[in-house]
Structures are given as C-alpha cells and as structure tokens.
Length: 223
Image (cartoon, rainbow, N blue to C red; front, side, top):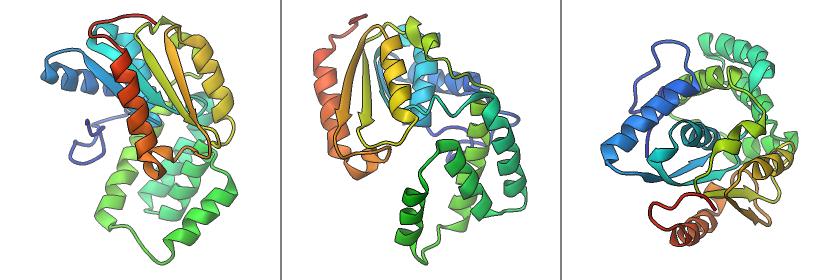
C-alpha cells in the first residue's frame, strides 16, 4: 500500500504536486511488484487510480475505486488551496479542517457529529502536521485537475465502482456520470453507508473486492 508524497513514511514533495507525480510514484511501486496488479483506491486514492489506469493500462489486471471526489477539482479548488496554505503556514488546525470540509462538501450535520464524537481528544501533533502537509499537496494536485468524467472512457480494464447509498451530493451524481463513462464497469452500492464506508463497514468492501477479483481472469481486458 503506497504512502503518497507528504504522508509518512514518504518524503514531502519538493514542489507543487500533480497527479502526474502521484502516478509516477505509483508506477514505481507496481514495477517493484514485477507484474500487473489489481489496483484499488478510495476517495483521493480512487482519483489517482483512475489517472493511473488511463496512463498505464498495461500495468493493471483490474481497477477498483470507491467514491473518487471528481467534483472537487479544477478552478474552484484554487481559492480553497490558498486558504488552506495560509492556515497551514500559521498552524491553524481549525481553519484547515474547515477548508477540507468545503472541498469535500461534507454536510454541516456530519461535521458537527464528528466534532462531538471527538470530544476533548486531540491528535498527535507530529502526525497531525504530517497529514496537513499531505493534504496541502493533495489540494495542489486537485486544483490542477479536471472534472470531466468523459476523460475516463479510455479505461478498458475490468473496473469495480463502489459507493455508499447515503453519501451526499454531488457524489451520487458524479458516480452516475463516471459509471456511464467507463466501458467495462461493475457497480456496487451499499445501503445505509456513506463516504466513510471503508472505515465503518470494511467487510462490505472486502467482500465486494473478493467477488470482483474472482470474476476477473488473469490478464483479461475489457468487460
């Protein structure tokens, strides 16, 4: 499981990060494996997995993605990146948290529930700072990315698209558009789950992946 630039134990990106950098890093990991892989990604990692599948399809046996936030990209992210960078430089954790919620568009009621559940608990300062660095560079990549789902129509490896039925808009609409664009897609929607399903119900994801891998013949391409 790769650790993206900015997230321990990987190094911090030396400059502004792009998905091209992420893809190059991921390809280096796949090359170390020494054979085509079943690539699985969730959230930002799902967007990275799509980029990798589009750029290097021969490296993959299959692709599985959970709720890539394809709507959280492009020019609209630029001002949020600036706000996040300013908050990062003054070590304002509250503002960084607020900016990330605007990027992901988490409903206020869910944010409030997370805050209440956390109570007085505080994350380890060193780990929190490292995550903040990672998010800063992820936002850089998102700000330079596009939002058109049609660009993924070139991905022909067998693809599993996973989502929660209760994830907030615009994720459901985005997933519908992505499913329409992918030519070799299987889709799983879990009732009662949201964007946190891989944490709250990991067995659902594991079972879906096992079933998908069992259907994909080694070296198979297309549906």
